[in-house]
Length: 64
Image 1: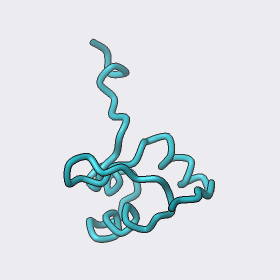
Image 2: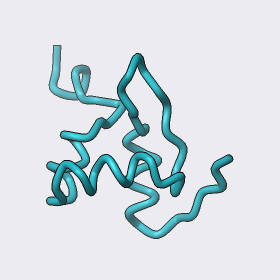
Image 3: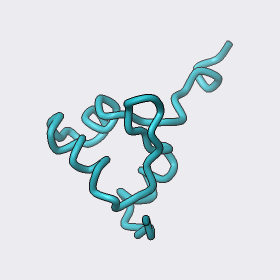
């Protein structure tokens, strides 16, 4: 099994904190901001890594 096989597809609060350098409250706020599509998995808010990366690059998403 390679590193590519085990790479995360969905990002949570801790992943966003690590990627962006923001704190827990700001990362949670981003996931609740409706700036990009978020899925609830159990009680956790998760965003697909490709969507989050596109958002970081400036792409805007329409979220209900």
